[in-house]
Length: 247
Image (cartoon, rainbow, N blue to C red; front, top):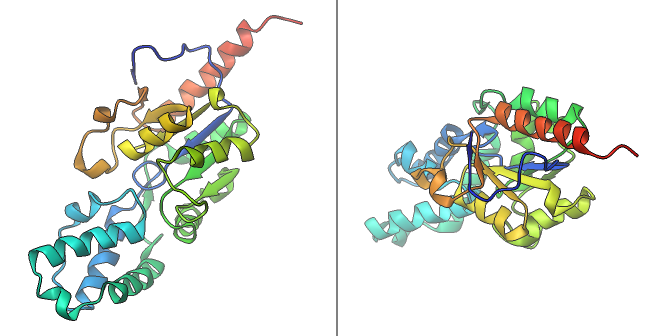
């Protein structure tokens, strides 16, 4: 675990932890790339490399497909003469609905880490920029849905990550304090979302983040995975309780 200079000490006890979904809890890149390429091929467009599509994950399914189409139209302007973006987006939605949850898998330690946190009384939220219906499909398929007190998608609120209102909404709904909350993600979007909301910005080193290392976004902590997140939060809570004055 890497710790940033100037971060609050270990005695800070955390009551709320929120998590990004794609690239943090679940490896979904393969499914998303398959759905995107199926939609492209249905309109006579050659498939794109999975790595290219994975680098576009982070701002929601619709945003991903629009960015991918923009690249294709720029490379081959003639394609835009006979392919309509809305038609491709509709097909992409159909492909996602039939694909998501079939092959996505939780990263190592996710289920156990979330379970340990929940059993300790920590309130948990999943905050994704993916549309809520798709986020719920994935969480249910991975048997993670019941571990969260709150699930938000990119269409749940007027704004989406990294807008400050998103994680502040989590604090409000779960009746907590920004000083006792952390958000865990795999990208600069998650780090910015946490920073904007005034909560701790934590990260995991795997995931997508447009193909760049997440440490470049300067999170306050980088954990190897969810097991280490749980270890840290539970140790913080135990130490904080031990140091609290006896009444």
